[in-house]
Length: 194
Image (cartoon, rainbow, N blue to C red; front, side):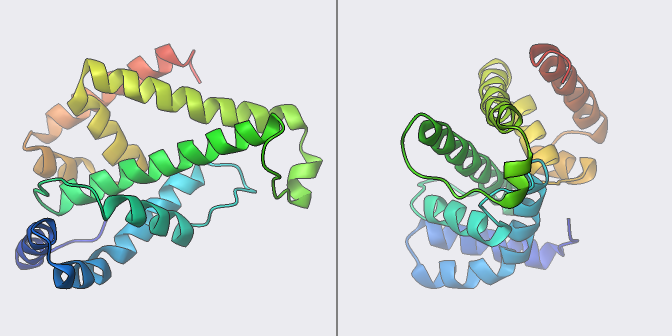
């Protein structure tokens, strides 16, 4: 994640709050400030997806943006915004996977690449199931411990470093390490070691 000066952080936080208060100009100024980071987060999310995924980083950013634009949250700061953007991107991917799964049951037609045709259908089905299972387990972890789930989301999907997480969550880096270690072990156990 790129280094952001204290002044830039304050500017971004002020823009987030102005946007929340209804300023369209704030939103127009905000988007260019975070667009590169949002694309980086989108690429991180898509790295874990199948190679023939129909969404590209730009499309994922835009779909997440469309969902975030109407969210009524009290944006705390840049880290809070990027964490929520990352969570929204994960929701877009899960919804996309669910749509593909519905389509396989006789719903919508799907675009299939030649690479996907070479891969056995059961592998594609397994990938969809894994996405949905991971999402369900992250939601379960969130019910158990919201901060640990948010740390997982921000680190593994949002690409935030331990230092950035410590600052964003107002805890020590040792706490970040300990809680991510716990969350990772819990998820591994729940997902059967995958």
